[in-house]
Image (cartoon, rainbow, N blue to C red; front, side):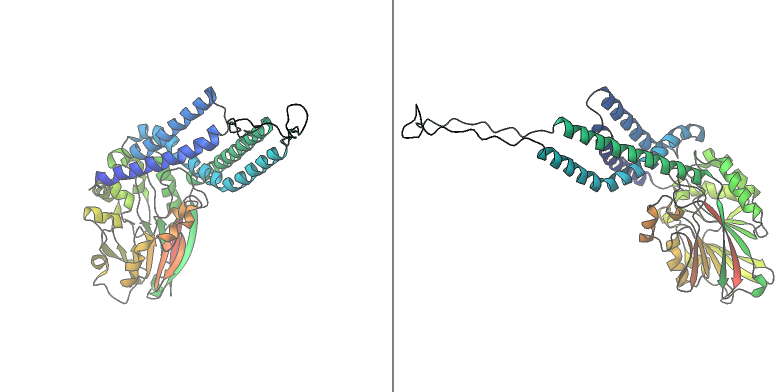
Length: 429
């Protein structure tokens, strides 16, 4: 079960077109404006073209190559993508002050140009008649050339261009370096208590470890999974919920990276729902692999969890992208016919699925998908599509908790959105 090839080709075409335009802008600001024509400009242009090709290759090939090969494409390509993003952002922000400074430089240059000296015209003397020179046929006068920038103006322009490029380059490198440290480090542990109005007091205190968006790939392998499993097990949860986007690649390539999931330990077991990237990677083989590892998929279904003297319904629905392969979410199948007197906790990868959860009387939905925005300022764009970027929110009578996830998509960088594993404790409302 895989997503058709055509959308992937369209995606790559869009990536190539958009990134090509961005690289042309970067070439203007970082190479053409800062280097005189010659060997070094040609070297800089060639390097930028190579980096652009690596970026396209990372987007096109990472999921298809074996991890041992794919990482040599993914690391430089995706790191450069992060640098490009922040270079573009910083240079665009600097465009207005750059334009104002260029105007000032031009004004100073024009003010320092010598004024034109008028040529005196004789009104008498030899060769004149009555004080007027004899008329002659008019001769065409060439249009005077517009003065180009003098040496001082050119020097100031070059200094401004190089200063702007240096500021943008250093700032982008610093931000990406900080973001790499965050993305590749140990996930934070977040703790949140959620009151459920129908929860039996005897089940209060049940703890669910919520983890999402591992995004196993050539960039994140077995060591990443082991680190996440260790963080979860240290929390000693009653139940583990893996809410989608486990992988970016096939079972053949990434099966060993997922193997440590079999070491997850909890009282009531580990459960999984699909995310959009799981369908891009072939969901069916991964669902079978997770069953083998002891992580139980909930495919538009629910199960009873007895904790203490109480019972909750744990349900899970497929991701929205599953519709493209006739495996989409079915809330009626997952939630229909259940008792009305006990709470239901729903696992759904995308927060936007909460609209259906509200309609079906869900008490708490656990989601991921957003990565918390992953790289500022993307967190400002997420609300255009999702009701909650990260953390706990409430939609009508349904609680919605969104974890930032523990992995990343694309660049191995997280800025303003550190990875997290969340321990959700249920309380009687």
